[in-house]
Image (tube, rainbow, N blue to C red; front, top):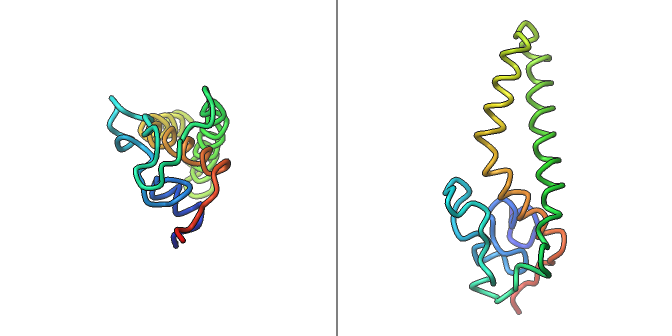
Amino acid sequence: MRKGTKLYSILKMKCPQCHEGDFFVARPYNLRKAGDLHENCSKCGLKYSKEPYFYFGAMFVAYGLAVALFVSLWVGFNLFIPETRAGIQVFVIATASILLGPYLYALSKIIWANLFFKYKAKS
C-alpha cells in the first residue's frame, strides 16, 4: 500500500488530499469522540466538510459495510461450520456488529470523504 492511493488514506485514516494529516480527532474506540473530525487538515489545510450535513451520505456507506459484515459472517458459518445453530449465528453476528460498530462508523466517514476529495502530491 503506497501513499497516493485512496486505500492508503482509508486504512491509515489520513487526510484524503495530502495523506499526512490525521482525519479524526481520536481513534474509533474512544467513544466520547468517536467520529469527530478535525475541522481542517493540520498539514495541507483542507477543510474536511464541503457543506453542512456533508457526512450524512456516509450513512449509506455504513449500511453497506454492515450488510457486508453480516453476509460475510453468515456465508462463512454456512460454508465452513454448517452445523452451527441459527441462534448462535445470530448471537455472533450481533456481537460482531456491536463490537465493530465504532470502527465501521469511522470507516464510512473516511470512505465518503475519499469519494469527494482527490489526492494532491506535494510539489
